Length: 469
Image 1 (tube, rainbow, N blue to C red):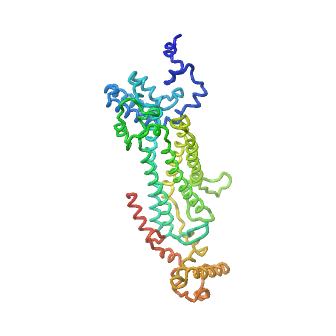
Image 2 (image 1 turned 120 degrees about the vertical axis):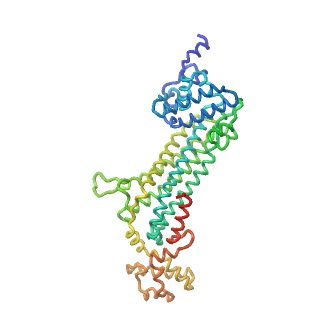
Image 3 (image 1 turned 90 degrees about the vertical axis):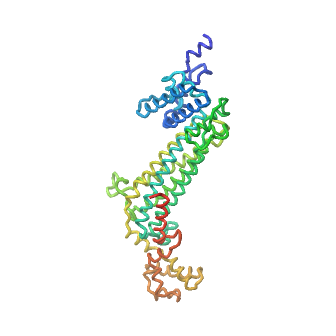
């Protein structure tokens, strides 16, 4: 049998099999295939192929008729996939080969011309960028939904007082609305980071081919325009091997999950019997199989736990890329599953918070009672003495002695008599009780960024303007 005869028999069945004399081992075929997970990028792969076909027709590599047949064939394949009538094959390795093989099967020779001037290296890089761009657009909307819930909570609870903590010890009384706006600010930075990341995602690798570009007269700017990219990539070698955009996204995603985890931790603490500050809706909790009294905050706990998956994905990508020479290597197939899992985890966590927060039940009385414990207005007494002319360090010492007396007698500063307080400093007068009340303490911090209810309402108005509602 001649070499030519051997080629026509197509014993390898792979679309790249011309150089090979035996088929791929079945285990190796399954081990190296990615279609089981990269099939989720079928929309992006088809969109990229349609744009590539139109560009090839524009520069004369395809005829108008061939382009029309390719685009129509790809639209038909998209329809089949969407309705669940498409058989994915591990034999064809990945999403790209599966779609191209089906296209050629349907429209014949024209389908074989689609891959002119490109490689799976620049094709997968393009698909990944299109996929991530779409996901970022969805995620920014989800972040805004959580922020909207926080703004509404902040507005509703602007006058609600709870103890603010440092080192998980009572520090100063604050507005619960102020606390919700702190969460809002964390997410606002996350939103901006995603938008900034999107700028570097939105660069088109297509046309870089395997690593060196192509000899075909491609109009890359036209393809970029069709796909909504800001511009084509500037270096073909970098374009096919770059995964910085994924690492950058996973870094931003990790920060979002860390923020959600911190929020979840506070909800878990606040909903415990020891705090009792909030009650989570029953539908976001579960019970115990043995202890009938239990109401477990499973959703916040899971979000707290799932943060590790996303941070782990970031570390995986960093390790994946740290020793790779240019350009594309098969290692890069391992970028997809961590990314896809991180995206799914982040979307689920944001949805959980957006659904849960509007129904949070706040126990204002428990919060206020907790703020009355722990001498939360001690700093207010020190500030009062400073305004009376005492240096702050001296005022700090005076108040420390008063607090020690309160610990010994089991009373808060506001519960002491004027005579008792004057034992620590004669400058203390009857007006001191105006600053020792929780409401007076909170209202006194009426500066930009402060916890006073007036400031909370101003910040709520500013946040509503940013969110557009």
